[in-house]
Length: 286
Image (cartoon, rainbow, N blue to C red):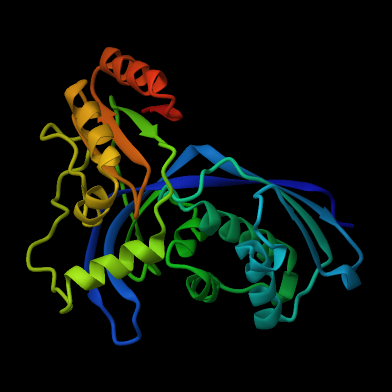
């Protein structure tokens, strides 16, 4: 008998993000370094139902129809791929803000797929098949299907290599300003400014980890585009750097801004600045 289960869906940031170009199918080739964060994180409370009930989904996002939720899409895709259709009630507590580039929806889908796969028995998918299914739902989903805390991703995000990211001695601050950046808009704007696919001529990730003596290697190709449309995000990044951050960058297509610090006192200074502006933030110590 299935028992109620509480699933945690963590956020992610992109320590680096380079858009290599646009494929013939319209998807973008990426080269990025993902890092999972334990906060913020969505919570999925899963309870068994009669098999005939299918998936009953409750989500606390106003205006989002359940049938459009990526958790529903994940359940449907898994059922179609495997024939496994368990009756489940899923209540979602959204803690990862939308439009931040933190992968909240993708993480929810990954948590749902992993849970379904753990229940499917002989119908469970292998690692590669599960990742392929996740990629069909979204470019960031495959990262949430692997156990590694960090990974370098290529392709549309489905070609993953676990990465050893050493942030020892650093404190990470993540700012979540009240700005919503639409991912589809960001990619469309990048396409408009880059009409021809671009090849990666020099590696944007060097052989040194973000925790090396040379300092963090942080980069995001979306920043120029997004900062032009949302100058307040540039101001946040610059204020964090001015307060003593060793490095700072935007995550994904925005609007989340993260910074790495060597001195805890400078983290507190930045936190005070954000608090005065009413900007939510999260602090991670490594």
